Image (cartoon, rainbow over all chains, first blue to last red; front, side, top):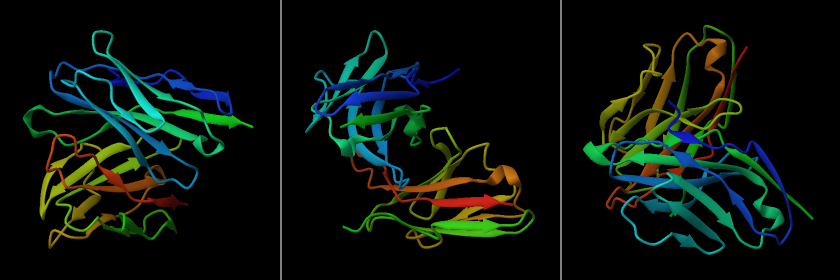
Length: 116
Length: 115
């Protein structure tokens, strides 16, 4: 079964608008972390934001925030005031943290295009 | 801190040849990870090291694949008798893993094309 689901293959957003990228996950591990990475055309995966399963507050990092809804198992990324440089692939990932697990499991990604 | 570096950035080889990739992690990061990313997919975990010890290997890592991190610093990933299905981006990441929140920092990847 898919552990990370990103249902939006592509999105087009006008510059300066906010954008929400969807991510749902599936795990039975009570301790897990959720990550968002950005991958520009150059190929490097750039870490954006982290949310732990026990965190009470939604994570924020500058223009990025993570809308964490634990009961719905969703971890959507919100980018405020989008910029042309935000055009890239965005990947949601999960790390199941019990028993010393280290690996990240990624979704299939969403290609975001910012329109001037 | 310099970031994670990978060499080469691109490799084109013929089917049946052996290839080796190198990854230099961020200094003092004791965790090092290898992932493979095929077109249109997210990265898939291959293996990881804590210092020089290889602690986990995915079933994706067939017998033709071997990874080493001999002194707990840089790592190499070798693919023997390459097949066209090995064509992918090979990503390396490192982490200090001092805290649960510590994330993995990725290098630019090595793009392998098997003809």
